[in-house]
Length: 116
Image (cartoon, rainbow, N blue to C red; front, side, top):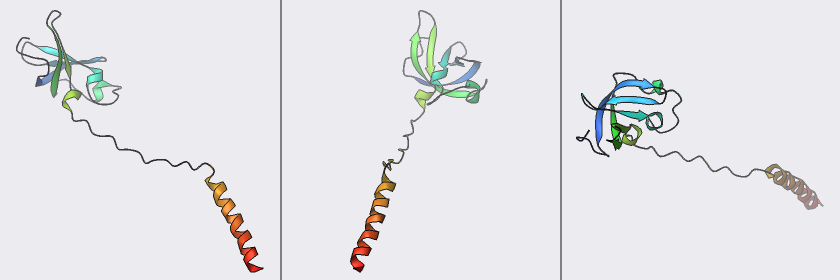
């Protein structure tokens, strides 16, 4: 475990998948856990939709707990965050029909006055 440091980005191989995350082998004797929340940006309902055993993945080391011999990994930390497209600004259309109808009524009134 001493060969790895927090922040290292390494290619590993998925060795096991559970509902809470995936185990990734970093070398022949070291493996860590990618928690389901660290698989990708956004919500992951089923980790099997993103990973399979034997798949090579790029992971970032988030935490090294040498006392408990645990390594926390993240796949999403290695992915570029795509900026979200901004949705168009919604205009308040409440009462828009009223304003248009009022103008229509006024136009009719103005036409009648102009004809006199």
